[in-house]
Length: 365
Image (tube, rainbow, N blue to C red; front, side):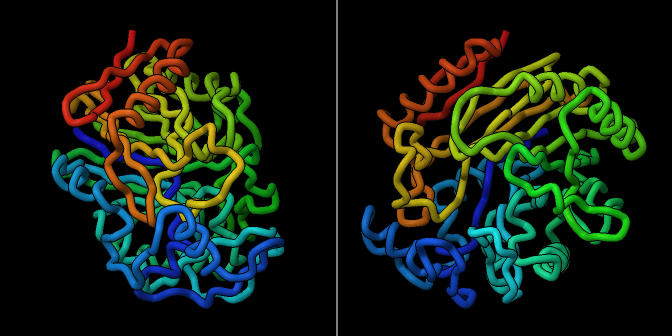
């Protein structure tokens, strides 16, 4: 079974402005007051961005790669609200995409959007509820947010052409910037928020997964955790991921929040992506963290054994974000990513080899 995974897909703000149905562009940020300003920032760096673009434009060269591999499941962390709500929460940064632009997700055949992140409630509870409804109406499953705690904790259940179910459980952590007050309760919509990454929390998560998991199911736990910048992997994250795998209920841990790629681990034959990095965003032209090369992104293609769910192969395809579109990178940039993954994987028992066509393939002990 083959899966496509990536990190944050932020189709709001500047991206939304170049799509066919832009939202009203007013922002409530300290510095910039219009979403169009993010388009202008990108254009100053890399030249004119056409507008309106078609819905497939933002995926660029990644689209052909995804289609050619025909993965059984296509999973993203959708880091924006999809809404016409005009009442932003007073948090300084508010992402939204117009509901009429949802076809940009359909263009890549996205099956499931993780919503347990620090931007899904940017436009309040109405924005969250509309996001879930709009995606559902478009045929895209969601996980990690809902009208109450039970709905937010419920996994997305996806049937694959191999005849197996894939369950996607999504969790958020306050370490990623999710306000504690965003946690869904029995009386309040919100996200599926972990109180911490302790063993006791891990036991509760394992118990919850067991109530839904059936024999033969493949389980993905998608976690929005940790800082935006920095390669360090907190020990609490490693312990938590290992605990879920040791319990025999999780096959992939899909971590995100970092704006750049982080080290990868294979533990007991199961893939742990601690930080996938951004994939699609309007951050082009924003300065301050150039040493991390956030313009370089990865598409992760994981091949799992059909019966056991163990990792057979992980291919990673590098792209560069330019003019709000993903382009294949040159050899120098591919080598830069390879060196970073090798350096960060050394303590995790993984390394990366460069193959034909600039494909990076994971090796593990």
